[in-house]
Image (cartoon, rainbow, N blue to C red; front, side):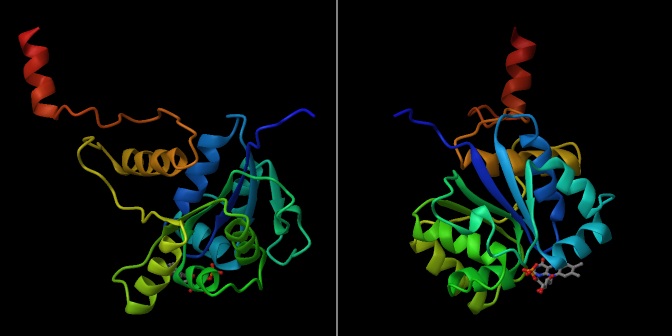
Length: 203
Ligand SMILES: Cc1cc2nc3c(=O)[nH]c(=O)nc-3n(C[C@H](O)[C@H](O)[C@H](O)COP(=O)(O)O)c2cc1C
C-alpha cells in the first residue's frame, strides 16, 4: 500500500478581534502545497468586515475547501478524514469554552473535538484581555491535553517596523507549530540588533 503524508490543515476563524491572523495564515499557505479546510463562525465574518478590508468571500477564496458552520456532516467532522490537525485563529473565549467542554454544536467545535479524540495537533490562537479565571482554567485544561495555546502576543526582538511585520511574525510562528516552516520573517538567531550592527561595521 502506498503511504501518503497528509497535508490538509483545518482552519477555524472565530469572532475574536484579530481576524487578520486567520486571513494571513490562509494567504501564507495559499500555493504552499498545504490544503486548507476553512470554517468561519458567524461572528468571525462580522468582526472581519469591521476590522479588515476583507469580506468573508475574499477569505473563503484563499482556502482550498470551505464548509458552512452548520454542516456537521462535512468531511472534517470525521476522524477518518486525515489531517495535520487544526488551527483556530483567532480563537474566541466562547469557542475555547465549547472545545474545553466537548460541545460539538457547530462545525468548528466538532472539528476541534475530532482533532482532540484522534490525538492530532490543535493550536488555539486565543484572544482576550484581561483573562478571567474561567478563560485560564479552560486554557489549562486543554494545554494539559496537549493543545497549543498560542495567544497572538507580538515579539520585539526581531525589530518589527510596522503592524504587518508583527502579524507576519506571529503567523509564521503559528504555522511553525505544524512543522511547516515558511521563512517570511527574520527568526531569532541569537544575535542582538546592536551586535549585528557592530559586527557589520567591523567587517
Ligand atoms: C469587534 C468585536 C471584537 C471581539 N473581540 C473578542 C475577543 O477578542 N475575544 C473574545 O473572546 N470575544 C470577542 N468578541 C465577542 C465574540 O465575537 C462573541 O463572544 C461571539 O459569540 C463568539 O462566537 P464564536 O466563537 O462562535 O465566533 C468580539 C466581538 C466583536 C463584535
